[in-house]
Length: 355
Length: 247
Image 1: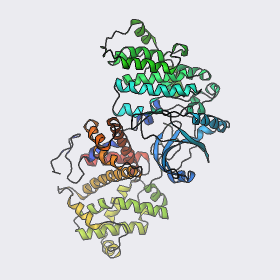
Image 2: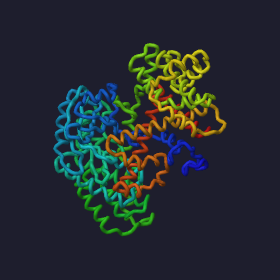
Image 3: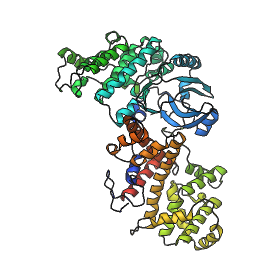
Image 4: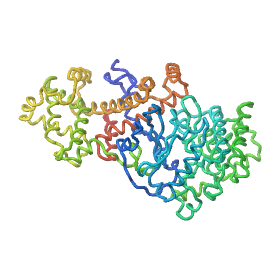
């Protein structure tokens, strides 16, 4: 390489002794970048932040805990616990091992609840839902062994390349199908958010962590007796009733959360406060405003009653495109007014739970 | 976010690192601490060598001196002389090497002691060939050392990642994208890579994004091995970046 080559990105001269494409300055710069927002931003992390045991494990100890597995690397961490990619030696296949944070398991009823919820999760069998292969307890760690998805999640997808409306609309029906299946089985996800919606390398959706939020927050009384910190879930995506009346949560909470996800995919923003309709922010079909608004209704009975309804409406929009609407669109005044009046109900409370 | 108490490059807790093991052992070297120091020395052998060469020693002498310096560290538990206020391995190593070189007696003895012993498997021909590629500008031995150290850190992080990808059978993907980790994402030839690996273009974009994140983690993990706490890690990263920026 000639001495006078320069890095196309930072303009620094490229040293003769480094491989092409490896501008040392740009590579070192990567070290300053934040982790995925999903991990690094406390606002995005689940809010169960009670104290923890502080047990520290290294990978060797982890390997001794799971002799049947070859632990390969950590692939994720959240408020719930940490996930490793591993290989089941006997079957020679990759799996994901999720360890629940030990401090979340202190409750004497945890073991029983864990077994109950894990069995419910394991009963779900759908191509767009992560399979649970096994679960149990090793020393103080409760764990799940799950299907490993080679890919990414919606959060990373939005961050890495952005999603245009067409791409966003392509994934929504897949999510709806999986959710409808789970709802028909009597299982509510309770923590639908971009981080829990995985996308494999073929573009297929896989929803993770069904019902896990319920495991951590089983009773409404947790909220009132032990304080807001026990509320589990990601506030920005939680239905109002999840914060206000956790015992009354049903499948329509997932519909609300999906509404937030769709809004974010379309606009790149969360529907906070007096948010604008999607078509006011980006050029999209105004019919999508109605879908999103209906999913985001504060009262569950005013939302879609089945998530399949979202799928039907989204597919109708995709099937008969009317072209992009201008910024000052033809949104019916009633719909626009409704958006303007829609105050995100959980937002104020969110501030409370994080204090 | 809250420290989850797991082994994790992401957790707030600062993991045990090679340098912290060595420092914790102090004069009472343990098999673990010796092994940790040996690994550190093997990784950063070349920056030491480049420094000695730039100090004016010929290739043969520089190889012997570097090797015997490392040997003396390992044999004499010289870490006891580390200044606890200068926590970083890099500072410690350069300080120790200077002391070593300025001690004529030790220097002469060291050649006899370590000259022919290859305690670390260093390919001496390779290192001199590499040294011949060093910039010939009028830069100081210290600047050569710092720059080479920074490049070694980058290499070590890449090597670590390469191993990870190899273990999961995705070396071709790594090879296709490794040259674009630090690049502007708009310049990554996603379509070409997708075609060559029979992947969807969107999947390549995601893979490139993920590789960048993993490189970020690997880089920080590599630097973490040479410091003892997270503040030092950030300081060290800044220092290395400044070295490469020429500021």
